[in-house]
Image 1 (cartoon, rainbow, N blue to C red):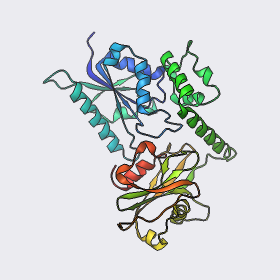
Image 2: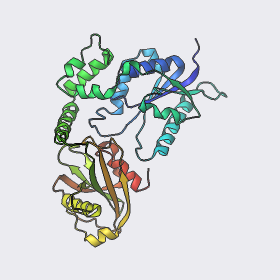
Image 3: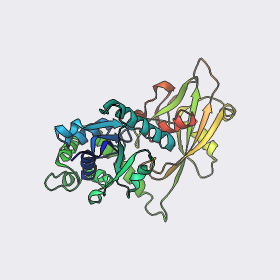
Image 4: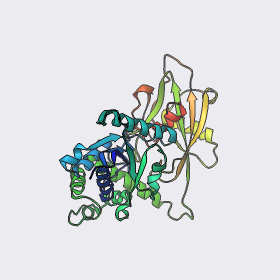
Length: 351
C-alpha cells in the first residue's frame, strides 16, 4: 500500500525511548515515506528529568529499527524555549522545512506532511499548533509513561525494570542500551546522586498541609559583553554554571534578596546604589518543571553595568565553587543549571 504522506513528524523527549514511543514510530513509518523525529530538550545539561542527550536518544531510537527503516528515519535535535512558545513553534517549522527541502524527492510537487502523536495526552498539545500540516492521532500504547521508568531506572529496582523477557515497557534493545549505560557511564551515578538529594529535600516538606511553592531570585549581571556566573558547588546541578541567586528570606524584599545572594556568591565589589541604578528589567520565570526540587518561581533582575575595560574582581563563596565573568558568546546551554540559559536569553532579548 502506498504511503499517504511524504513526511510524518514526531516530536518528543524520549527520556527514555519506550514501547509507547516505538508504536508511534512504527505507525509514522507506515503512514509516510520518511519519518522526521524531533528530539526535544536538546542541548541541556543532564538532570533527573533529562538524563540523556539527544545523541544518546537517537541511538536508542535507531537501535529499535531495522536497517531499512533507519534509512527512512531522520532524527534532529529540538531545543526547548520554555518562555517563548512562538519561537519554539518557529524552530519546529524551520527544522521540518529544512529537512523536507533536503530530502523531498518529488520535484515540482509540494511535500505532504503530517504530525503524529497522542492527541488526548497532555504532551500532545503541539498537534494543534501547526494547522498547515495534517494530523495523525494515535492511541497511547498501554498508557506507558517515561517518568516512572526513569524513577525506577535510577533506583535499586533497576534490575527489575531491565529484565528483557516479556518487558511491557521497554524494547529489548533499549533494556540492553540502558543496562550498558548504567554499567559504564559515570553520568548514571551523577544523576542517581542528584535524585537522592532531591528525594531527601522533598521529604523535609512531606508534613506540609500543601505542596510548597518556593520563591527565589537570580541576578543577570552584564558588563562589557560578559555575564557573571557561578559554578555550583553541590547538588542539584553540581558542577554546572548558574546565575548568582538563591532563596528569599522571610523578612526580605525581592531586590534585597537578589543583591544579598549576588554578594554572598560572587563577592562582587560594586556599590549597592550602582547595582540598583543599573537594573534594566525584572521578570518572573515560572515554568512548572524548571526545578527538580519542586515548584520554584524565580524573580530575575537584569543588571547592566557601565562598560569598562577592566571587569570587577569576583570570587566564588557560599554555595558557589567559582565565580567568573564569561563572554556572552561562550555560553553553552548544555553546561548550565536548570533554565538559567533561557532566563538569560529572555532578559537579553535574544530568545
